[in-house]
Image 1 (cartoon, helix red, strand yellow):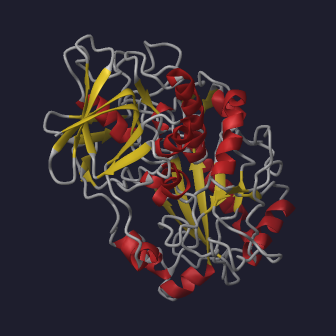
Image 2: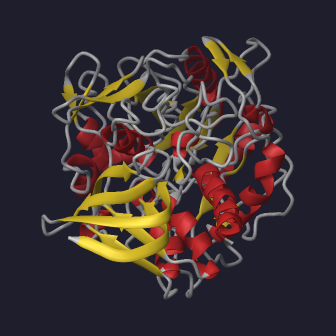
Length: 526
């Protein structure tokens, strides 16, 4: 099957990068075709069911990848309109200005970006307004300058989290309201008004939003883009390869397997890859030809390399007092983001997770055998739980990479101990304060005063860095506009372009960059 229409732009993927780019291009009148591997996520009660989402993994893709030892694992990837933003926690942070420069870490150097914070700042502001981010610039002393305040006020803390914020301030620290993308209107007490789309529930983190109150790429960008006659989308279109002209300088055909099993080809002046860092790299590697024997855009041999995903730790403390909080994801702390008085390297940031419940803890119970108190039922533990997310920077190592063999087997190789000293120190900082923060200081648990969980190799939610951009074609795949050095009409606009990842959630940076590249494409296409 061949599509005889010629498009101005084809966008492959509908997540934070691809979906946002489609939204930016839609008013331009350019003919835009979106190809999405998945379909729309079913709206059903299981969207908000902990057992379905976390225990049965109902919405994860049924894929198997392999680690560097050849052991298989299921990756945490979702193929739906909106990409992984359907399940993200909508924490939309800016990178710090220092993240754009070279930073020395415990285990090595985090490289500089080819653009500065100041170049991306106007697009950060646009991204925050587009994705309905609630927050307050000026509370976090580590953030960079902002050209405009958030368009929406901070999501108010519920009483237990307000107490936590007050207690942190008494420690001389600077807690701030976590910037979060939700379609929320608050009354004078912080509750959801009768006409608010978001209802301030406890399902924001890791769940798809049943009422479309979370600012995901489908709701915010893709659906509004499709209201324009010049934008169309084909779902169930799994792009298998990109074909080039004989000279190898232009992508001439995008080949996809459709939902009915047929194969279709599509053509455009510009082709944009936004499949997620791993799958974007895999598509370029799969598209190898005589002119590009190592894969498209890969004369530098960096495609698939420098995979990053953050060094993360989920930590559940046990509050002395019950924690009846529903919308817990309202607070963050970056005091040690760039270092501390007792270390001279960055540690990272702390933020609240969505409120854990008994089913989530029950799902973790086999792994936590011997650590849980037999006298504390899951329901009681959940009622007293206060959930933290610790995030440290993963360094871009060339040997941390995704590869594809001739049989199509995907291997993800990484060093799970890469630059973890900062995260361990951050964990110690938080642990030392828990008694002063109203958490149990005595041994409710057999081994510690909290439960903590590192992220296994399958935790790919913050994936980045496999098709990095830069000024030098010898060490990067993309130029500063995210166009492939080796091709004239191929771009990549998901988190694959990151040369480093910082220690905050990468989504807002992907969104801001997609807006920036969108402006470049509008100018290029005239």
